[in-house]
Image (cartoon, rainbow, N blue to C red):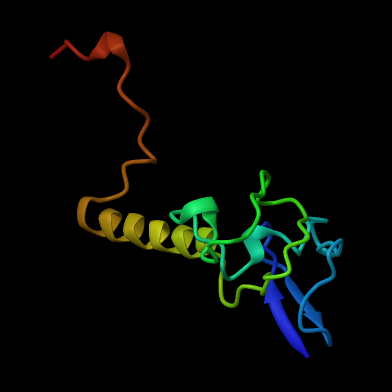
Length: 114
């Protein structure tokens, strides 16, 4: 049984099949699973945003496509990894400088009073 993650919600897709069908939807968020964002060859910095140079242009990377080169991406979504890194960085800064989010900003009237 294979298990992969949806690009949109991160829900696990588990199946006896190796790849989702062309029109298969995520059971959690109804996003298309056979799309560029779920493909291991999707590379935003590459020509046509695909590591395979001869693929046809796909306008909507989150919508279904009929690409025969599709292979489900393994591992966590980049956005989930980036969110974790962002939270870790924020926690480290708060540990050094303190968390000032709880204090309300000073009012304009009190800025110049002693």
